[in-house]
Image 1 (spheres, helix red, strand yellow):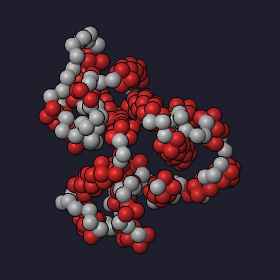
Image 2 (image 1 turned 180 degrees about the vertical axis):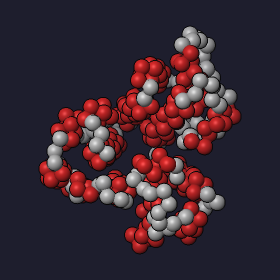
Image 3 (image 1 turned 90 degrees about the vertical axis):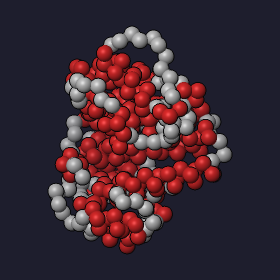
Length: 312
């Protein structure tokens, strides 16, 4: 765990239970293997080795935490492929991974004047994806260098072993080109990676929502709107806990949720008691107590578990 992650999650450098952070990484899969008692055991581990032993006992294979999580993700993907009626339903899911990869590549490339290679950041990228990281990186370089290169970019098959939805080796889509240009322009003015993340997050959110709408499925659209609301709710709790200013909070909010942006801005100004009451009135009573408790050690992870329980 990096020092940044320790600060972000308000954990001491070497405390018992520091691997509680991994709870968030496992949030999409833990319900299949872990009971509350099992989680208490994980919370009490004081080393990476002890944590890995707990994972192996619960059928997470691998010699490292990353191996265990990757294998679990592949197992989930195999199940999805066997059950999903139409592969187009995977488009929005993979687009979210594209968004992560775009943010990662922008962060790394903007931190240096030298061209980075995919080999340097391969372990930070997510797959399967719908847009090749190679194309994303090329587009980032083109935007940084302000080159007018009209030659179309195509991929070799071996460049995208898991790029399952990259139809006909299409180049980076227009919405992503615009997001890259905007992010790089903003970075040249403000030198803020956080602002770059905001720009990319909003662009990918719009693209994913558009994909869900194209499926013409009320269920999928409503599910994604719930996910957006929970992201905004988590942003609200984090911003209040870390005393982030209102302007930054407002610019970080995501559109297309069921709860209006204007309402989230109003919630930001409320006292803890008023916020808890308001959440109870909008069918978020299961999360009302976090208005008082989110800042406590471990509560952010409990929040993640509660969100996944509701979505499931």
